[in-house]
Image (cartoon, rainbow, N blue to C red; front, side, top):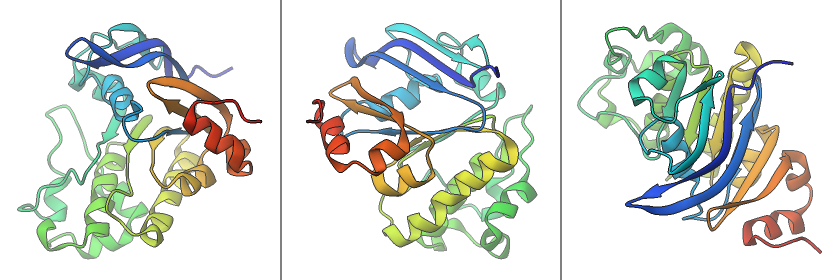
Length: 237
């Protein structure tokens, strides 16, 4: 059996000594997309920040490719093959599209051609300043920069923020294609729940910092009562 790309066990994390997430257990296998769902304030973004080293866990462990990264600096976690596409359009308006693929660290090689293969429209825009792009194009670039690192584990936080559902519907399948072609793993936080469940293999629902559902994404997609109950932290009748 292949080693999980991500193993979270008994994770409690938060800010200023106050736990936002309590006792979470999440596993992401090679070639798997896990949708991390829940209402605003449930702790989804905090979990992603903890995985990438921005937030330190209060308890529990976070293992990436078999190594406990709970006390490792973010740049070292990234070098293990983790790429974090953070909430909001993490792009620089004064730079061109092409310049974004030259922002990697000294030991990091960003493969722009690899990224353009998933987003051909960006190739035509490579000399354009990002401030002149549409919101959808900016978010496309943010994801493309993440893919240019050829991550083994990709963390994606609210890709659809501020975008029309029709734009999101075109972008999310790129994650499925990337996973299928590379065997990488994805942990996806997404407010458009039904679109996320269409591409995900597994769903994990958080409510008030607790994991209240963990199972096949198809189970939630086809059972609206179960989905609603998971969001409310209640048992489905």
